[in-house]
Image (cartoon, rainbow over all chains, first blue to last red; front, side):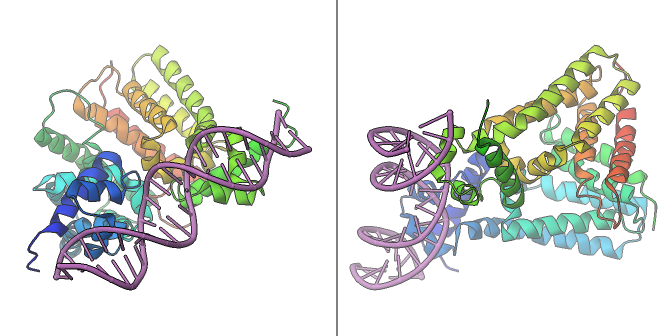
Length: 187
Length: 187
DNA sequence: ACCTGAACACCGTTCAAGT
DNA sequence: ACCTGAACACCGTTCAAGT
């Protein structure tokens, strides 16, 4: 706990930056170590492996998603719930320090598939989609639910019009998501 | 041309299989070489580098997309054109040997970002999205266009209902895509 | 508790040399 | 034309040893 040097936190910060910029596979532990003026081996005192570094800054997001799923399960499966759920999802993605973690996920989708943390994220995405389509098990509903989540994610890069603020991106994403959700039948 | 042994084609086939199964970064040239009973160095006689192997089976798909974009540019920017374009896109993705190449892309999105072939694919996706939103430069239209393309892609994994055929996936994807496209203003 | 130095097996790539 | 053998610098990981 009482880390005197704070090396662990510094590793996390540098790793998040480099993994996002260059990608997980393209970033070597040597690079991270050099930025911190330590040896590669020092990283292994703080983390069991390279992908444990990823897990460390993914955990917070997993917790948020779990809370969201738990909340959704208690609500009636109506359009109002679906709209509220996607809005809360967007909030937790666009809020606080999360944008940098979100950019990391955006950048490293594939690498994450083989990582423990990535599979957990994938699992949560499917459970969120299920929560959005609850009561309507049709294939079309599953696709609409998944696309409404993608709408939130892809608003970051798919909207290339100039001078669009984060707040506007969020608004547009929810507008498009809502249309998709409106076509899912209530439970 | 007149390759006697056909080693080049055998490399492509094995690489596509392994890259799709395990991912590009996780597949070593040693693995590919061993399957073919040649040395790693032999691969370098047929391909300049590891990512040139990828380029070799991506080219056909790039050509298809270029043809599609060229076709779209000649059409009036109406809903009918957008529907026809996305249908043709789905056809070219679901048709012939392409599903395996499509699964490769699905599996390797991130690795592709740093590859020449990947950047070309990304460029074509944006140009397709632009063709779909032509005449409506609003941010919402850009997002809708991108999501309609995603609908085609994600129908492969987002629809998890049992016993859904490829043909049904295609139909559902186009149904959802059409709704998104209907909300884009005509040029 | 925190970190180093040196070693490990493996990676993509190069190149002279063989047929 | 087609391929091998050996070397290159680099990778993630381990571990005994130092403070």
